[in-house]
Image (cartoon, rainbow, N blue to C red):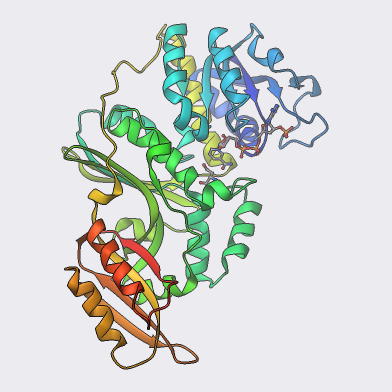
Length: 429
Ligand code: NAP
Ligand code: HSE
């Protein structure tokens, strides 16, 4: 074993990501010690079930069901929270900070909803919280935004930041898998949450967007105020039509600085096949950033999974140990600016709509009139005949305000020949 300062770690949770950290230390611990001069040892690990088989065989006395055995152990200097959820994670992190431990966490739910309060507590305790793995898993996003791009005024961030939904949409697109089959596969592969509703309904991406936007735009973001729409309404038919029109469908998390405030939203969108985000497939994530100095940049990689996420967690631990060695306190000196969150109604966008209509003369014209009357100009139109006299009409509008588009839709859906179950998605410019 390489020599190096031995640093004892306490871990709260040893599931997918915790198991990844243990495997990483087993596999690359020596390499890490050689490179950093720091030898990380898992001293105590909190779990719920002591009888459960773990990814790595650690000495049995390492495991405990007592949080105090981890956070109050004087030999431990860094506590790594990998339990997930709000409580008891929030209380245990607070206690660990008060015990003068630095904290590393991958918990986006917690950091999005209570990050500011925990960062303030860390500052008061003279300690740090590191949360690189909470958004984008193994891809460095938080450190580049916080440090490397700090001189930029960020204009927008556009991310594919949920691996489960990207995997589902990719498999639906390339393998014609249905939604449930693709979701089950994502769960087997370990990147869908045990309860995948947060992934599917877009909340997971919204939490990550709240964290990233807070850093990119230097403000505090309440994830409860974001516009969120999940992927439940995306069908294979829409994916096929999108492709025919030169697009792919992705769940996007978008943050833009606009005059008067920030517009933050998570929703499925048609992405032009030529856009760099269109080629982000499977569980891969990417964040596209536009800054006033750097122009466009994109970060790409694995946003979930045991080892990629562990890679970010362990890098944070090393950062914590190094900062401690330099006697540094909290690394969040800037005061967040007050920024207003703008409503979706300020958005101008192109829209994709798929209508089901009776295949009768004049239907097409009536639809075009409904849109035209509201000043919504149509860019592309496809009509396909389905069974039993039902036609599928797909159209893409030119850029229009959200309000004007909604008025046109209300008018179109009142037409007697148009069925009420239309699919609507925004189109990335
Ligand atoms: P997980 O597989 O469900 O593991 C959770 C671990 O925490 C388990 O070992 C569990 O113990 C332990 N635990 C939970 N509640 C506990 C309690 N009240 N007392 C004691 N132990 C408790 O979760 P995960 O997928 O590793 O995710 C961990 C965190 O990383 C979450 O915040 C998640 O959002 C985040 N994250 C995950 C991924 C990913 O790819 N999975 C990627 C990025 C970020 P038992 O094993 O005994 O049940
Ligand atoms: N469930 C999350 C995802 C895990 O699919 O992206 C990583 O945060």
